[in-house]
Amino acid sequence: MGPLKGRKIVEIAGIGPGPMCAMLLADLGAEVVRVDRTVDSGLGLRRGKGDDSAYNLLARGRKSVAVDLKKPEGVETVLRLVEQADGLIEGFRPGVTERLGIGPDVCLERNPRLVYGRMTGWGQHGPLAQAAGHDINYIALTGALHAIGRKDSGPVPPLNLVGDFGGGALYLAFGIVAAMLEAERSGKGQVVDAAMTDGAASLMTIFYGMHASGMWRDERGVNVLDTGSHFYEVYETADGKHVSIGSIEPKFYAELVRLAGLEGEELAPQMDPANWPGLRARFAEIFRRKTREEWCAIMEGTDVCFAPVLSLAEAPGHPHNKARETFVEVAGIVQPNVAPRFSRTPGAVRMPPAKAGEHSREILADWGFSEQEIGSLLANKAVLQQEV
Image (tube, rainbow, N blue to C red):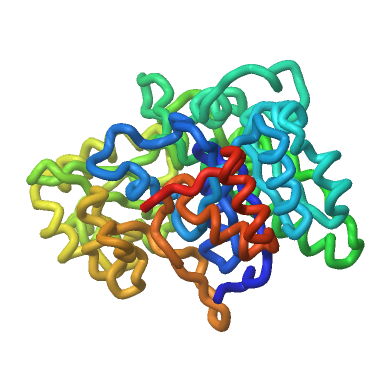
């Protein structure tokens, strides 16, 4: 099931973008084996309820083997898995996997067709390569964070969507799949160096073009897409909720004006930035007259380019999301479904998140280890089997 069925990936457990990349590949059919640590790694949510691992949704769709990489037998176990894999995912600082004995040179020697995916914030080289960091730092360095925010406010971090997931996980998944396709032709693997700074910068390509042309200013909240314009904005409604408007094109803007009840009013020209503050105030006053649901009844499904601003609790219940099955319930937890969709080889959420080492025996047996070898690895604690 899924377009990546038959592909085998080894994931060295980490946090954030590495696990999401592995989730994406698993959702699309790849057999991804997650190599967890044999001791508490501190990677759990720790703020959830009940069994934290059950809520670690980025770990869904794959089985877990717990390996002690400080033991030679543990390192050899991972290399045995690598020999049979199409790809590997790791998210340590540069040089860490080399010190552990599972670096790209060693792995590619064992398996010349391997695609070795490396996920870092700053990349494998450069002055900051060894520095600690998180999403907020990586997008700060690329111009992305500076550009996000309202006028007269500081930059607003867009959760960790732009660095970790958009600029990190998605680019690594894209790179791994592209390299696997190339390996089919050449018979040779390679290293994919996915840096969140590179990915976030790539996501900003259109804005660098607009900036160079003079269409985008470095000042926040004065541009077309950063809440500077009144026709690409979020407005509060009478019940304290919000709606989103994206009426950029003239025909869509005309529909906004009509459905907002302003068709007979002489409004200043839409595209002159000098008019935007006054027009925003006028539309804000209009939208505060009705509740969010009342505006949905008027504008949803029209060419206004309109949508209600829904919370995480509300979004799964929206009729459009329900019709497309954008969200799915797995093991009692509502979560985003597989994306994108495929007409002939659809992906699927194949299993809920596993506990570390839950499938150690099963994985090793499936990947060709003998019962004697498995028993020996468990006995000397190079591999841990988690009892569920």
